[in-house]
Length: 162
Length: 289
Image (cartoon, rainbow over all chains, first blue to last red):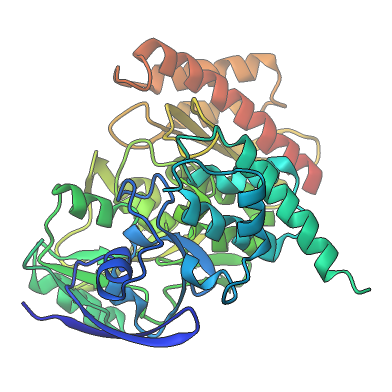
Protein backbone atom coordinates (compact mmCIF):
# COMPACT_ATOMS: atom_id res chain seq x y z
CA UNK A 1 0.00 0.00 0.00
CA UNK A 2 1.46 3.31 -1.08
CA UNK A 3 0.76 6.10 1.34
CA UNK A 4 0.30 9.62 0.08
CA UNK A 5 2.38 12.46 1.45
CA UNK A 6 0.34 15.60 2.03
CA UNK A 7 1.55 19.11 2.94
CA UNK A 8 -1.16 21.39 4.19
CA UNK A 9 -1.92 24.13 6.71
CA UNK A 10 -3.94 23.35 9.82
CA UNK A 11 -5.04 26.17 12.13
CA UNK A 12 -2.38 28.45 10.69
CA UNK A 13 0.53 26.02 11.08
CA UNK A 14 2.18 23.97 8.36
CA UNK A 15 1.30 20.30 8.74
CA UNK A 16 2.53 17.21 6.93
CA UNK A 17 1.18 13.71 7.08
CA UNK A 18 1.06 10.36 5.32
CA UNK A 19 -2.36 8.92 4.57
CA UNK A 20 -4.09 6.08 2.78
CA UNK A 21 -5.66 7.14 -0.55
CA UNK A 22 -9.18 6.63 0.78
CA UNK A 23 -8.63 8.12 4.24
CA UNK A 24 -10.91 10.99 5.11
CA UNK A 25 -9.62 14.32 6.30
CA UNK A 26 -11.49 13.64 9.54
CA UNK A 27 -9.59 10.38 10.07
CA UNK A 28 -6.27 12.14 9.61
CA UNK A 29 -7.18 15.11 11.80
CA UNK A 30 -8.21 12.81 14.62
CA UNK A 31 -5.93 9.79 14.34
CA UNK A 32 -2.77 11.18 12.73
CA UNK A 33 -2.65 14.80 13.84
CA UNK A 34 -4.31 14.19 17.23
CA UNK A 35 -6.93 16.89 16.71
CA UNK A 36 -9.85 15.01 18.23
CA UNK A 37 -12.20 17.98 18.58
CA UNK A 38 -13.91 17.23 15.26
CA UNK A 39 -16.23 14.28 15.78
CA UNK A 40 -17.52 11.51 13.56
CA UNK A 41 -21.26 11.21 14.04
CA UNK A 42 -22.60 9.70 10.84
CA UNK A 43 -19.71 9.53 8.39
CA UNK A 44 -22.10 10.44 5.58
CA UNK A 45 -22.42 14.23 5.70
CA UNK A 46 -25.75 14.27 7.51
CA UNK A 47 -24.82 15.36 11.04
CA UNK A 48 -22.16 18.07 10.71
CA UNK A 49 -20.23 16.98 13.84
CA UNK A 50 -17.04 16.86 11.74
CA UNK A 51 -17.45 20.39 10.32
CA UNK A 52 -14.15 22.12 9.54
CA UNK A 53 -13.18 25.05 7.32
CA UNK A 54 -11.41 24.10 4.06
CA UNK A 55 -10.01 27.12 2.21
CA UNK A 56 -12.45 29.29 4.16
CA UNK A 57 -15.60 27.26 3.40
CA UNK A 58 -17.25 24.95 5.90
CA UNK A 59 -17.34 21.30 4.88
CA UNK A 60 -17.93 17.90 6.44
CA UNK A 61 -14.40 16.57 6.94
CA UNK A 62 -15.75 13.01 6.74
CA UNK A 63 -16.58 13.73 3.09
CA UNK A 64 -13.18 15.15 2.18
CA UNK A 65 -10.32 12.84 1.30
CA UNK A 66 -7.22 13.68 3.30
CA UNK A 67 -5.24 13.70 0.05
CA UNK A 68 -7.40 16.56 -1.20
CA UNK A 69 -5.96 18.79 1.54
CA UNK A 70 -2.63 19.09 -0.31
CA UNK A 71 -1.78 22.80 -0.46
CA UNK A 72 -5.09 23.81 1.11
CA UNK A 73 -5.89 25.55 4.36
CA UNK A 74 -7.78 23.70 7.08
CA UNK A 75 -9.23 25.26 10.23
CA UNK A 76 -10.71 23.14 13.01
CA UNK A 77 -12.43 23.68 16.34
CA UNK A 78 -9.00 23.59 18.01
CA UNK A 79 -8.17 26.91 16.34
CA UNK A 80 -11.32 28.78 17.35
CA UNK A 81 -10.22 29.91 20.83
CA UNK A 82 -7.21 32.20 21.09
CA UNK A 83 -5.06 30.46 23.66
CA UNK A 84 -7.18 30.27 26.79
CA UNK A 85 -9.57 33.00 25.62
CA UNK A 86 -12.74 31.48 24.27
CA UNK A 87 -14.33 32.82 21.11
CA UNK A 88 -17.65 34.60 21.83
CA UNK A 89 -19.54 31.71 20.19
CA UNK A 90 -17.89 29.29 22.62
CA UNK A 91 -18.51 31.59 25.59
CA UNK A 92 -22.18 32.01 24.72
CA UNK A 93 -22.63 28.26 24.27
CA UNK A 94 -21.49 27.90 27.90
CA UNK A 95 -23.59 30.78 29.22
CA UNK A 96 -26.74 29.60 27.43
CA UNK A 97 -26.16 25.92 28.22
CA UNK A 98 -26.34 25.25 24.49
CA UNK A 99 -25.02 21.73 24.89
CA UNK A 100 -25.70 18.63 26.89
CA UNK A 101 -23.64 15.67 25.75
CA UNK A 102 -21.40 17.97 23.70
CA UNK A 103 -20.70 15.62 20.81
CA UNK A 104 -22.22 17.94 18.20
CA UNK A 105 -20.81 21.11 19.79
CA UNK A 106 -17.49 21.45 17.90
CA UNK A 107 -19.33 21.22 14.59
CA UNK A 108 -21.94 23.73 15.68
CA UNK A 109 -19.31 26.17 16.87
CA UNK A 110 -17.25 25.97 13.69
CA UNK A 111 -20.42 26.40 11.60
CA UNK A 112 -21.80 29.24 13.74
CA UNK A 113 -18.49 31.09 13.62
CA UNK A 114 -18.44 30.68 9.83
CA UNK A 115 -21.86 32.32 9.66
CA UNK A 116 -20.95 35.22 11.96
CA UNK A 117 -17.67 35.82 10.13
CA UNK A 118 -19.64 36.62 6.98
CA UNK A 119 -22.92 37.86 8.44
CA UNK A 120 -22.55 39.57 11.81
CA UNK A 121 -26.27 40.33 12.05
CA UNK A 122 -28.20 37.20 11.06
CA UNK A 123 -31.90 36.73 11.71
CA UNK A 124 -32.99 33.72 13.75
CA UNK A 125 -34.28 32.18 10.52
CA UNK A 126 -30.90 32.63 8.85
CA UNK A 127 -29.19 30.98 11.84
CA UNK A 128 -31.56 28.02 11.73
CA UNK A 129 -31.13 27.49 7.98
CA UNK A 130 -27.35 27.87 8.19
CA UNK A 131 -27.16 25.28 10.96
CA UNK A 132 -29.56 22.83 9.27
CA UNK A 133 -26.62 20.55 8.46
CA UNK A 134 -25.68 20.21 12.13
CA UNK A 135 -27.72 17.76 14.15
CA UNK A 136 -28.16 17.88 17.92
CA UNK A 137 -30.15 15.17 19.64
CA UNK A 138 -30.02 16.74 23.13
CA UNK A 139 -30.96 20.40 23.17
CA UNK A 140 -33.84 20.78 20.76
CA UNK A 141 -31.75 23.54 19.10
CA UNK A 142 -33.41 26.47 20.86
CA UNK A 143 -30.55 27.12 23.25
CA UNK A 144 -28.05 26.77 20.42
CA UNK A 145 -29.86 29.36 18.33
CA UNK A 146 -30.07 31.73 21.31
CA UNK A 147 -26.36 31.29 21.99
CA UNK A 148 -25.50 32.10 18.38
CA UNK A 149 -27.75 35.17 18.41
CA UNK A 150 -26.12 36.32 21.66
CA UNK A 151 -22.64 35.74 20.23
CA UNK A 152 -23.60 37.76 17.17
CA UNK A 153 -24.75 40.64 19.37
CA UNK A 154 -21.53 40.55 21.35
CA UNK A 155 -19.37 40.41 18.23
CA UNK A 156 -21.22 43.40 16.78
CA UNK A 157 -20.51 45.32 19.96
CA UNK A 158 -16.83 44.35 19.89
CA UNK A 159 -16.54 45.41 16.29
CA UNK A 160 -18.21 48.78 16.82
CA UNK A 161 -15.48 51.38 17.19
CA UNK A 162 -15.67 53.11 20.59
CA UNK B 1 -11.41 0.12 -0.47
CA UNK B 2 -7.97 -1.16 0.43
CA UNK B 3 -6.60 -1.15 -3.11
CA UNK B 4 -7.81 2.32 -4.04
CA UNK B 5 -5.35 4.84 -5.46
CA UNK B 6 -5.77 8.62 -5.56
CA UNK B 7 -4.81 10.81 -8.52
CA UNK B 8 -5.16 14.54 -9.02
CA UNK B 9 -4.37 15.07 -12.71
CA UNK B 10 -3.73 18.55 -14.05
CA UNK B 11 -5.32 18.12 -17.48
CA UNK B 12 -8.49 16.66 -18.99
CA UNK B 13 -6.36 14.34 -21.15
CA UNK B 14 -4.57 12.90 -18.11
CA UNK B 15 -7.91 12.41 -16.35
CA UNK B 16 -9.31 10.55 -19.36
CA UNK B 17 -6.19 8.35 -19.51
CA UNK B 18 -6.48 7.50 -15.81
CA UNK B 19 -10.21 6.76 -16.10
CA UNK B 20 -9.65 4.66 -19.24
CA UNK B 21 -6.90 2.64 -17.58
CA UNK B 22 -9.21 1.23 -14.90
CA UNK B 23 -12.90 0.52 -15.53
CA UNK B 24 -13.57 0.78 -11.80
CA UNK B 25 -11.97 4.25 -11.54
CA UNK B 26 -14.30 7.05 -10.54
CA UNK B 27 -14.03 10.81 -11.03
CA UNK B 28 -14.15 12.83 -7.80
CA UNK B 29 -15.86 16.20 -7.82
CA UNK B 30 -17.28 17.22 -4.46
CA UNK B 31 -17.31 13.67 -3.11
CA UNK B 32 -20.64 14.04 -1.32
CA UNK B 33 -22.01 10.98 -3.10
CA UNK B 34 -18.82 9.12 -4.09
CA UNK B 35 -17.20 9.10 -0.64
CA UNK B 36 -20.49 8.11 1.03
CA UNK B 37 -20.85 5.20 -1.40
CA UNK B 38 -17.25 4.12 -0.83
CA UNK B 39 -17.75 4.21 2.92
CA UNK B 40 -20.95 2.18 2.75
CA UNK B 41 -19.24 -0.46 0.61
CA UNK B 42 -21.50 0.14 -2.36
CA UNK B 43 -18.54 1.28 -4.46
CA UNK B 44 -14.96 0.13 -4.34
CA UNK B 45 -13.18 2.14 -7.04
CA UNK B 46 -9.69 1.00 -8.00
CA UNK B 47 -8.74 4.63 -8.53
CA UNK B 48 -10.16 8.00 -7.51
CA UNK B 49 -9.54 10.70 -10.10
CA UNK B 50 -9.85 14.09 -8.41
CA UNK B 51 -10.97 16.62 -11.04
CA UNK B 52 -10.42 19.72 -8.94
CA UNK B 53 -6.79 20.32 -9.95
CA UNK B 54 -7.68 20.57 -13.63
CA UNK B 55 -7.73 24.14 -14.87
CA UNK B 56 -11.19 25.49 -15.66
CA UNK B 57 -12.94 22.75 -13.72
CA UNK B 58 -13.86 24.94 -10.77
CA UNK B 59 -15.84 28.07 -11.58
CA UNK B 60 -18.37 29.71 -13.87
CA UNK B 61 -17.22 31.32 -17.13
CA UNK B 62 -19.12 33.32 -19.72
CA UNK B 63 -19.14 32.31 -23.37
CA UNK B 64 -20.81 35.33 -24.90
CA UNK B 65 -24.08 35.49 -22.96
CA UNK B 66 -24.04 31.75 -22.27
CA UNK B 67 -22.63 30.19 -19.10
CA UNK B 68 -20.02 27.47 -18.78
CA UNK B 69 -20.00 25.76 -15.39
CA UNK B 70 -16.92 23.67 -14.63
CA UNK B 71 -17.72 20.16 -13.45
CA UNK B 72 -16.09 20.69 -10.04
CA UNK B 73 -17.91 23.95 -9.27
CA UNK B 74 -19.65 23.63 -5.91
CA UNK B 75 -23.33 24.58 -5.66
CA UNK B 76 -22.56 27.50 -3.32
CA UNK B 77 -20.38 29.10 -6.00
CA UNK B 78 -23.33 29.15 -8.41
CA UNK B 79 -25.28 31.31 -5.98
CA UNK B 80 -22.30 33.62 -5.63
CA UNK B 81 -22.27 34.27 -9.41
CA UNK B 82 -24.74 37.16 -9.69
CA UNK B 83 -25.12 36.98 -13.49
CA UNK B 84 -25.83 33.25 -13.44
CA UNK B 85 -28.27 33.58 -10.53
CA UNK B 86 -30.10 36.36 -12.40
CA UNK B 87 -30.25 34.47 -15.70
CA UNK B 88 -31.12 30.98 -14.39
CA UNK B 89 -32.54 31.38 -10.88
CA UNK B 90 -34.38 28.06 -11.08
CA UNK B 91 -31.17 26.13 -11.74
CA UNK B 92 -29.22 27.97 -9.05
CA UNK B 93 -32.01 27.53 -6.49
CA UNK B 94 -32.37 23.84 -7.33
CA UNK B 95 -28.65 23.26 -6.79
CA UNK B 96 -28.87 25.10 -3.50
CA UNK B 97 -31.68 22.93 -2.16
CA UNK B 98 -29.25 20.00 -2.01
CA UNK B 99 -28.09 18.95 1.47
CA UNK B 100 -26.67 21.50 3.90
CA UNK B 101 -24.29 24.45 3.56
CA UNK B 102 -21.45 22.02 4.30
CA UNK B 103 -22.61 19.71 1.52
CA UNK B 104 -23.26 22.51 -0.99
CA UNK B 105 -19.75 23.87 -0.43
CA UNK B 106 -18.52 20.61 -1.99
CA UNK B 107 -21.34 19.09 -4.03
CA UNK B 108 -21.47 19.88 -7.77
CA UNK B 109 -24.24 19.82 -10.37
CA UNK B 110 -22.16 17.54 -12.59
CA UNK B 111 -21.90 15.12 -9.68
CA UNK B 112 -25.60 15.44 -8.94
CA UNK B 113 -26.26 14.55 -12.59
CA UNK B 114 -23.76 11.68 -12.84
CA UNK B 115 -24.79 10.14 -9.52
CA UNK B 116 -27.99 9.49 -11.49
CA UNK B 117 -30.39 9.58 -8.58
CA UNK B 118 -33.96 9.98 -9.88
CA UNK B 119 -34.52 12.52 -7.09
CA UNK B 120 -31.50 14.74 -7.87
CA UNK B 121 -32.67 18.33 -7.36
CA UNK B 122 -30.54 20.15 -9.92
CA UNK B 123 -31.31 17.76 -12.77
CA UNK B 124 -34.94 18.69 -13.63
CA UNK B 125 -33.92 22.35 -13.52
CA UNK B 126 -30.97 21.68 -15.85
CA UNK B 127 -33.12 19.64 -18.23
CA UNK B 128 -35.80 22.35 -18.30
CA UNK B 129 -33.14 24.99 -18.96
CA UNK B 130 -31.78 23.04 -21.93
CA UNK B 131 -28.39 22.49 -20.32
CA UNK B 132 -25.76 20.74 -22.43
CA UNK B 133 -22.94 18.69 -20.90
CA UNK B 134 -19.52 18.59 -22.49
CA UNK B 135 -18.21 15.06 -22.02
CA UNK B 136 -14.52 14.23 -22.41
CA UNK B 137 -13.41 10.74 -23.32
CA UNK B 138 -10.84 8.71 -25.21
CA UNK B 139 -12.22 9.92 -28.56
CA UNK B 140 -12.30 13.58 -27.58
CA UNK B 141 -15.16 15.84 -26.58
CA UNK B 142 -18.86 15.37 -27.26
CA UNK B 143 -21.96 17.29 -26.24
CA UNK B 144 -24.85 15.58 -24.48
CA UNK B 145 -28.13 17.11 -23.26
CA UNK B 146 -28.30 16.95 -19.45
CA UNK B 147 -31.37 14.71 -19.51
CA UNK B 148 -29.51 12.12 -21.63
CA UNK B 149 -26.80 11.52 -19.00
CA UNK B 150 -28.78 9.43 -16.47
CA UNK B 151 -30.25 6.21 -17.89
CA UNK B 152 -31.46 4.46 -14.72
CA UNK B 153 -30.92 4.85 -10.96
CA UNK B 154 -27.15 5.03 -10.45
CA UNK B 155 -26.34 4.45 -14.14
CA UNK B 156 -25.29 6.97 -16.81
CA UNK B 157 -24.82 6.95 -20.56
CA UNK B 158 -21.13 7.82 -20.11
CA UNK B 159 -18.77 5.35 -21.75
CA UNK B 160 -15.45 3.96 -20.51
CA UNK B 161 -13.01 6.73 -19.70
CA UNK B 162 -15.63 9.47 -20.07
CA UNK B 163 -16.54 12.18 -17.61
CA UNK B 164 -18.49 15.43 -17.66
CA UNK B 165 -16.10 18.36 -18.03
CA UNK B 166 -18.57 21.22 -17.95
CA UNK B 167 -22.24 22.09 -18.07
CA UNK B 168 -23.34 24.80 -20.49
CA UNK B 169 -26.42 26.90 -19.96
CA UNK B 170 -27.62 28.98 -22.89
CA UNK B 171 -27.94 32.74 -22.73
CA UNK B 172 -31.15 33.69 -21.03
CA UNK B 173 -33.69 34.24 -23.81
CA UNK B 174 -35.49 37.59 -23.91
CA UNK B 175 -38.69 37.12 -21.93
CA UNK B 176 -37.36 33.90 -20.40
CA UNK B 177 -37.81 32.63 -16.85
CA UNK B 178 -37.24 29.39 -14.98
CA UNK B 179 -38.12 27.80 -11.66
CA UNK B 180 -37.71 24.53 -9.76
CA UNK B 181 -39.84 23.33 -6.87
CA UNK B 182 -39.69 20.15 -4.85
CA UNK B 183 -41.79 18.49 -2.22
CA UNK B 184 -40.01 17.35 0.95
CA UNK B 185 -41.09 16.81 4.56
CA UNK B 186 -38.23 19.06 5.78
CA UNK B 187 -37.13 22.23 4.01
CA UNK B 188 -33.42 21.35 4.44
CA UNK B 189 -31.34 18.17 4.34
CA UNK B 190 -34.01 16.18 2.56
CA UNK B 191 -34.47 14.28 -0.68
CA UNK B 192 -37.18 15.25 -3.15
CA UNK B 193 -40.39 13.22 -3.01
CA UNK B 194 -41.26 14.98 -6.26
CA UNK B 195 -39.45 17.76 -8.16
CA UNK B 196 -40.55 19.90 -11.08
CA UNK B 197 -38.51 22.29 -13.21
CA UNK B 198 -40.02 24.69 -15.75
CA UNK B 199 -38.29 27.04 -18.19
CA UNK B 200 -40.41 29.17 -20.52
CA UNK B 201 -40.37 32.23 -22.73
CA UNK B 202 -43.13 34.86 -22.91
CA UNK B 203 -43.49 37.36 -25.71
CA UNK B 204 -44.29 41.05 -25.17
CA UNK B 205 -48.01 40.21 -24.90
CA UNK B 206 -47.41 37.59 -22.20
CA UNK B 207 -48.06 34.69 -24.55
CA UNK B 208 -45.85 31.67 -24.00
CA UNK B 209 -43.72 30.96 -27.08
CA UNK B 210 -41.74 28.00 -25.75
CA UNK B 211 -41.67 25.90 -22.59
CA UNK B 212 -39.74 22.94 -21.22
CA UNK B 213 -41.01 20.97 -18.24
CA UNK B 214 -38.93 18.31 -16.46
CA UNK B 215 -39.77 16.13 -13.46
CA UNK B 216 -37.72 14.41 -10.79
CA UNK B 217 -38.50 11.39 -8.58
CA UNK B 218 -41.46 10.22 -10.68
CA UNK B 219 -39.52 7.72 -12.79
CA UNK B 220 -36.15 5.96 -12.98
CA UNK B 221 -34.57 9.11 -14.47
CA UNK B 222 -35.46 12.76 -14.93
CA UNK B 223 -38.48 13.00 -17.25
CA UNK B 224 -38.68 15.76 -19.87
CA UNK B 225 -42.41 16.09 -20.63
CA UNK B 226 -42.83 17.55 -24.10
CA UNK B 227 -46.64 17.47 -23.90
CA UNK B 228 -46.50 19.57 -20.73
CA UNK B 229 -44.40 22.23 -22.40
CA UNK B 230 -46.67 22.13 -25.46
CA UNK B 231 -49.70 22.68 -23.20
CA UNK B 232 -48.35 26.13 -22.32
CA UNK B 233 -47.19 27.29 -25.76
CA UNK B 234 -49.61 29.77 -27.38
CA UNK B 235 -51.37 30.46 -24.08
CA UNK B 236 -51.12 33.16 -21.44
CA UNK B 237 -50.96 30.45 -18.76
CA UNK B 238 -54.68 30.67 -18.10
CA UNK B 239 -56.43 28.08 -15.94
CA UNK B 240 -57.15 25.80 -18.89
CA UNK B 241 -53.52 25.79 -19.97
CA UNK B 242 -52.32 25.12 -16.43
CA UNK B 243 -54.85 22.29 -16.09
CA UNK B 244 -53.57 20.78 -19.34
CA UNK B 245 -50.01 21.14 -18.04
CA UNK B 246 -50.88 19.32 -14.82
CA UNK B 247 -52.67 16.58 -16.73
CA UNK B 248 -49.73 16.05 -19.08
CA UNK B 249 -47.35 15.95 -16.13
CA UNK B 250 -49.43 13.40 -14.27
CA UNK B 251 -49.72 11.23 -17.38
CA UNK B 252 -45.91 11.25 -17.76
CA UNK B 253 -45.29 10.41 -14.09
CA UNK B 254 -44.57 6.77 -13.33
CA UNK B 255 -43.31 6.89 -9.76
CA UNK B 256 -42.79 4.11 -7.27
CA UNK B 257 -44.18 3.67 -3.76
CA UNK B 258 -41.44 3.99 -1.17
CA UNK B 259 -40.85 5.32 2.31
CA UNK B 260 -40.86 8.90 1.05
CA UNK B 261 -44.12 8.87 -0.87
CA UNK B 262 -46.81 6.87 -2.58
CA UNK B 263 -47.55 6.63 -6.28
CA UNK B 264 -50.78 8.58 -6.03
CA UNK B 265 -49.26 11.33 -3.87
CA UNK B 266 -46.29 11.72 -6.19
CA UNK B 267 -48.46 11.92 -9.31
CA UNK B 268 -50.77 14.46 -7.75
CA UNK B 269 -47.90 16.57 -6.41
CA UNK B 270 -46.07 16.47 -9.75
CA UNK B 271 -49.07 18.22 -11.28
CA UNK B 272 -49.25 20.75 -8.47
CA UNK B 273 -45.54 21.56 -8.44
CA UNK B 274 -45.30 21.86 -12.23
CA UNK B 275 -48.19 24.32 -12.19
CA UNK B 276 -46.65 26.40 -9.39
CA UNK B 277 -43.21 26.32 -11.01
CA UNK B 278 -44.73 27.47 -14.32
CA UNK B 279 -46.32 30.46 -12.60
CA UNK B 280 -43.05 31.40 -10.87
CA UNK B 281 -41.16 31.03 -14.15
CA UNK B 282 -43.77 33.23 -15.86
CA UNK B 283 -43.53 35.90 -13.17
CA UNK B 284 -39.76 35.91 -13.61
CA UNK B 285 -40.14 36.10 -17.38
CA UNK B 286 -42.57 38.99 -17.00
CA UNK B 287 -40.34 40.83 -14.57
CA UNK B 288 -37.55 40.90 -17.10
CA UNK B 289 -39.70 41.72 -20.15
